[in-house]
Length: 236
Figure 1 (cartoon, rainbow, N blue to C red):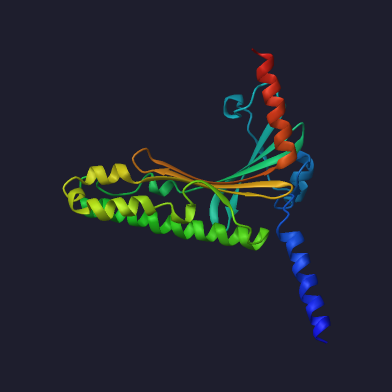
Figure 2: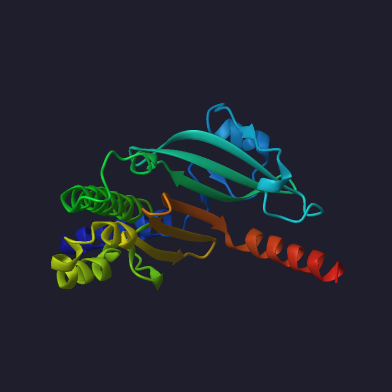
């Protein structure tokens, strides 16, 4: 009996690891899908093509098309851009909307006002980061990421330490406090077929709040990079 139970547990664990830890696309869109197949996978969602070549960020001779949908991810308003190389889906970039912090009603010359602004940004961002980490763990398993710079879960640690030391002085110079509300953090997960990147880049002074999640096909992304590299070499 115990042997049967152990077999069931191991079988379920194996099935979970195969489905959760080996993503091979975004949502229901498999890597390599055409635009038509992607539209079908998204139940006919309206994909709007971005035609301005200046926004593409790719050489003109590399056949990449970009489409956009507006929806929500993990309950957060977002805009998703889907990238196709020779009509093969290879990357999705989700940009979360935190524009309310750009138009926040506060006075950067008043310490209490700046402090309230920062605490709102901090609390909202950390809750958001925890939600994204939870979502990724549920979908892809508990694989540990690697980091460039700070771990997004601790993106305010350096700023918090600075504020703890300089808080008294900043009371007399709140605009300097305002300028210090900035951080950059990146997490990356690599799976056999997929690269996942999560970034929190923000600067209150520059009104920059870039919270993004991207997934890309490892094979197709390498093919795109090689094609771009060959294109640029040809222009030398």
